[in-house]
Length: 183
View 1 (cartoon, rainbow, N blue to C red):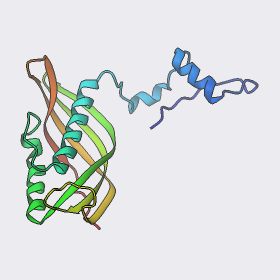
View 2 (cartoon, rainbow, N blue to C red; view 1 turned 90 degrees about the vertical axis):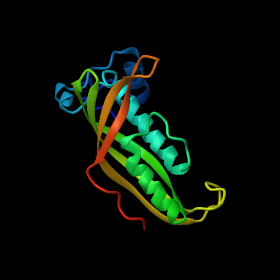
View 3 (cartoon, rainbow, N blue to C red; view 1 turned 45 degrees about the vertical axis):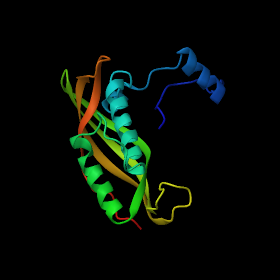
View 4 (cartoon, rainbow, N blue to C red; view 1 turned 60 degrees about the vertical axis):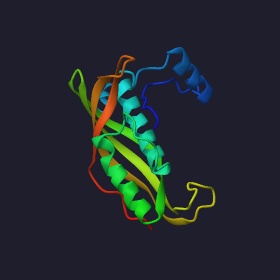
């Protein structure tokens, strides 16, 4: 994703990539147009929330790959559906590689000082494998593929103190649609 800029520039002074990068680095680039504030979010303002969602996504990817991983603090109602899916796949003699290709955050809504709702559009792709004795292992047979596909997600986050100061954790996630079928 690229930031949007619109500003007048003298035609006789060609704005090269190098010159533009220099303007961005030294802070002399003009600000994005005011109208973009209707859909752009200050990244620093919601950094803790976006990092919590990204951490959850990474953890879900790991849980799919290493099916027997020990539950941790990120487990809870948010991962119940994932654990059910893993159990279903294991019973069928399969496991899944679940790869996040990208996340576009749509909104950050602070419900209270310790509760927030984050909406995002996520792009994933999955590979279904035959479960072997030592899986996951290079060379495991591929059963099917799906994606890339996009899901709209709504995350509920709570701020908790885990002994190292307050941190945001995902307590629930709801998807507006189901992933497509494997092909």
